[in-house]
Image (cartoon, rainbow, N blue to C red; front, side, top):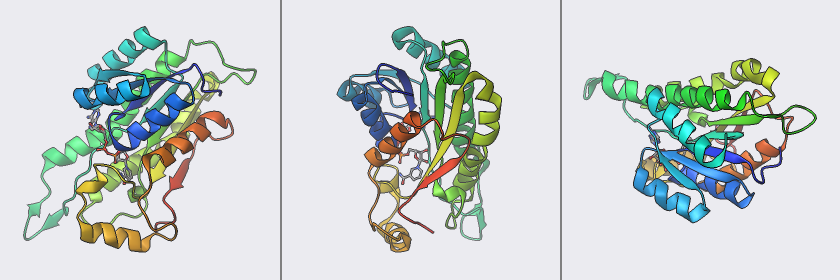
Amino acid sequence: MKIHGLSALVTGGASGIGAGVARVLARAGAKVAILDRNAELAQATAAAVGGIAIACDVASDASVQQAVAAAQAAQGAARILVNCAGIDTARKIASRKTGSHPIGPMQRVIDVNLVGTLSCCAHASYAMLDLAPLDADGERGVLINIASVAAFNAPNGQSVYAASKAGVVGAPLPLARDLARYGIRVMTIAPGLFDTPLAGTMDDAMTGQVLRQVLFPKRKGRPDEIGALVQHICENQMLNASTIRIDAGLF
Ligand SMILES: NC(=O)c1ccc[n+]([C@@H]2O[C@H](COP(=O)([O-])OP(=O)(O)OC[C@H]3O[C@@H](n4cnc5c(N)ncnc54)[C@H](O)[C@@H]3O)[C@@H](O)[C@H]2O)c1
């Protein structure tokens, strides 16, 4: 699809990877709506990219439904959804020192990272179904979900986060099967280590350990590099139903 003039929803677009995606899509001419729990930061990022901000907790289905409707009323139904909203948790599933992993943070990570992603896919794609096709192939839209390489190979203390992201890696094929008849593609992106406030919560020892495992280049990725991949997925119709790693070779 040609991005120019299309509406796009970016969840978690206030900060980090989502802000990078919002910048790149706006530069390509999209009308960007940032759906984020952090309303103040979302306003600032939206203003910087010439988009709009909508307060939304992706873990609440009602909040997602309202936000998708509000974005549609302001900018027309979105053809592009990029799910970047996500949270981390670092704790061993059980240890003598910390006990067993409490259910509260476990549930929240799954609700935000996995259920939130699926809920946004459901409401955003439903709003695309009756849109006119964009081209002779019948393309109507694209859904792009941010997972993590943790879905494939996570260090200890990351079982809950990794499981939430493994769900996002498992989703594109059946989602794409559900939506193929409407001309809607679905892709997952699995990033390695990127320079964002979330990654900044990792201590220096752990950051160094991860970067030593990276093949090349041995640095954190930049959010705009994920934005560039999102732009390519939007523009390249042959990308569908799979996951792309963007990690500089992190195994
Ligand atoms: N930074 C990395 O190295 C890295 C690596 C792999 C995957 N990821 C994934 O990329 C995504 C973005 O992470 P980031 O590093 O940019 O983090 P970040 O903390 O900079 O940004 C995350 C954004 O999501 C928003 N958010 C959190 N919970 C929300 C909710 N319930 N509803 C709506 N918005 C919510 C936050 O307010 C924030 O603006 C996450 O899904 C994360 O798991 C990040």
